[in-house]
Amino acid sequence: MAFAMHNHALALFSTLVLVMISFEIACGSHHHHHHHLKSLHFSLYQHETINKTGYIIVNGIKGGAGVTQTTTPFGTFFVFQDILTATANRSSKVVGSSEGTSITSSFDGLQSISIAKLTLRLKHHKGSVQVVGGTNNIKPSDYPVVGGTGDFLFVQGYVTSSPVDLKGITVTYKVEFHLYWPPYASQAF
Ligand SMILES: *[C@@H]1O[C@H](CO)[C@@H](O)[C@H](O)[C@H]1NC(C)=O
Ligand SMILES: *[C@@H]1O[C@H](CO)[C@@H](O)[C@H](O)[C@H]1NC(C)=O
Image (cartoon, rainbow, N blue to C red; front, side, top):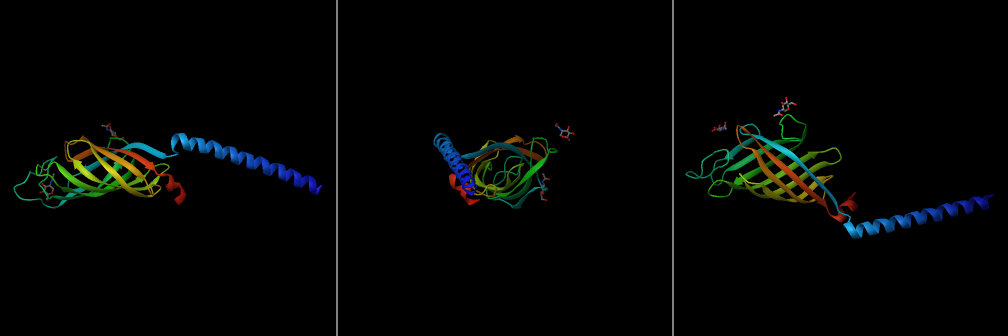
């Protein structure tokens, strides 16, 4: 009886080993063809209201470009904490925030160097993504992702920010995320 049980357990064990080996083979081939990279692509909308969610903290040089919807004088130090929503409608679901600074870095007042922490509360991913790069106030700008926290730990890729509506006191940008997790990211959990 005990022997039979032992045999049964052994048979079960070898079946398990076989299943595990075939699983490894399946995963191995998948890894080979698709590099097993986890990635995520989605878009959110950033809304910024002058003197409410974004402020000029330090004025730029005198005699530089004027303060308009798209320009600020060279050297202007701007800080923002904007909401990120699911659709272009400002009343749509808030799924995160964008906190950062921009320093006007071109004499025509159209470009700046920006740093931002994008906090995301998505259905299956929570954490933050850090980006840095050059902003063109009237064209789409690509920002390399320099890292992340929480579910975005070790994340790489880029974020594209494009103006959607620059009229009025609240401006809206479409923010496209292209995120890739390196293979070692999964080992951290
Ligand atoms: C924002 O505040 C500054 C300083 O008080 C003011 O000069 C500027 O006109 C305001 N801008 C807008 C768009 O209300
Ligand atoms: C934005 O959403 C609000 C609330 O759902 C709605 O009342 C409004 O009509 C929407 N605006 C546009 C432009 O779709």
